[in-house]
Image 1 (cartoon, rainbow, N blue to C red):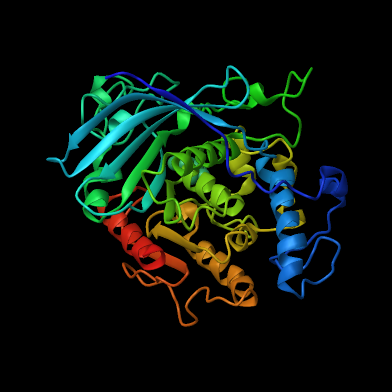
Image 2: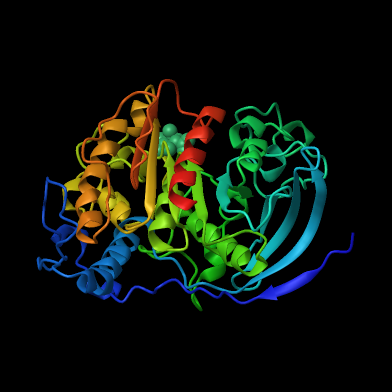
Length: 422
Ligand code: GCU
């Protein structure tokens, strides 16, 4: 097969924050608020009363606040250049085909993303798509020996994979986590990439080994206090993948769902909040720093997450360790940035570290913004019931069991996506 190359221009530019960092006070000067901040009240205390104010003032302000104090600022979109590296038209007895595409983006030398795109062959029309960030490499998602092994930094071990994940031993090890065949059978395509391609998940905060240093300004040698951490970098990778999918046209990007588990669920919600092309947002068991409240100290705390994983957020977020009440937002505000799009929080009973109850409260607290915008949010009578999907636009699910992403979880994701995309 002859590799080919084509140049894409990012058709979509992220709306840049209209509020600059200079407008925001240092952490010590933020007011103490032990309650959940009202998403419809601006930082200066004024109330949002019209949809125009929401769109033009409060949404940009919230986007900037989350980047400033927590995740770090994302750079503007860059063009994406794609090269086909491998493909196979005969997957799952001919029901699907896949291709592996190297995506170059950012300034010269930025490490590329290897995207695996699996598409159903047996249906008419262009399929809707699930985009997913994976933990262990694309070769663990499909057992096909032609899928390239990852060459990026890799995790030493992975659930389902024996031994050295980055070798043949890892191949197919996450088939039951990603369930590509079931996704195909349900009429969706799957686009997935390995998070280590964008930013290695090492517990250091020097930001020397991921995409970030490639985006340094002239003369910059180390990250600034509001520069992007790993969660933001993984989200930026999602945005560049969608740029490619938009241009490639083998899937219907108007019907696009994004899913990620745990730390990649945090990246999923952040990516969805900043990119309106993501129509269904599914952060699975994302917990602290994603779907669970920062206030109230249930399960993992802000201090704990910043201590264990100093590279996930920016260097300002740890200033809130002892004073989460100063945060000018809580995670329900991230959900409101997704409005009016569909968001599903899914959980496991034994995963109390991710605070499933607190997550439900985040949806309840985001609901008024959906209503304000004139759409339904969380079903008014909704309450968490074990194993029952609440499939309203703001959706919730909790099942028995542990922190994991399973075939049964995927049935729920697919049902939710069917309801909100088809
Ligand atoms: C740890 C961390 C969580 C995270 C999880 C994961 O448990 O404390 O915040 O969600 O790892 O990503 O697997």
